Length: 295
Image (tube, rainbow, N blue to C red):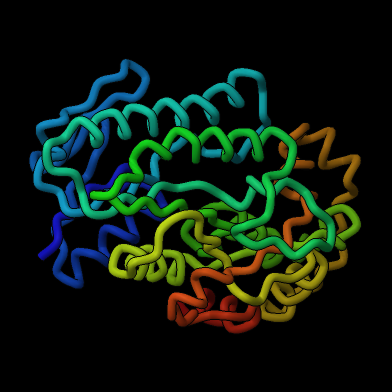
């Protein structure tokens, strides 16, 4: 039985990961502001963490961070940045101070690190891009870097759009499509790189067990343009997708978030994940959506 500490264990990905790891026999130790009795208390805002509770853990999965949806006000952007950078710095300081460090630490990041790159295919070796999200992800990964030592393998999860009915951007798109309000965003030519929640969780568990370290793109092989994404979703739900959202309207409604998230073109390949032997349950969008709708 492996002891795995998880930050963000109550979140969308963290909650599903906790169930998956417990079902396979691991002991999950939640790290949070109000953890259960067997958990670890921390507060990144005040720089407090119960280092004693991290002793004897075999692995850490660090997923905590402010949600990025919603309009990016100055205060919201500060929370997005600080929750990731300060939280990761706090965790890194605590882990590196331990006499016995965990064998592996998996720390969240995102494909936002690449910025908007048009039709360019992006791999783990690709240079970071520009923009607010790219800067957030760059500093996020830099904060985790001290964790990587001869004793501890560090994995950086560069995650794409996580598709699930349980929440997030996909759930909102699904609801709009079912009401007949779906359609491309902007030109629809931008590349969207996605992964199902099921494969996201399976991939994290795979990375806990594999010897792979460094940056890993957590996206499905079947990335597609936004127009194809919306049309595939419409066909699966037997609804039209004929109401486009003009880029100008998205920028007015959502500000910078529209450009960095919805209109950004990020054509990412899961090269290292595939080379490590991981097999996707849903490698293409059509099969992914069918599985989500059946689930």
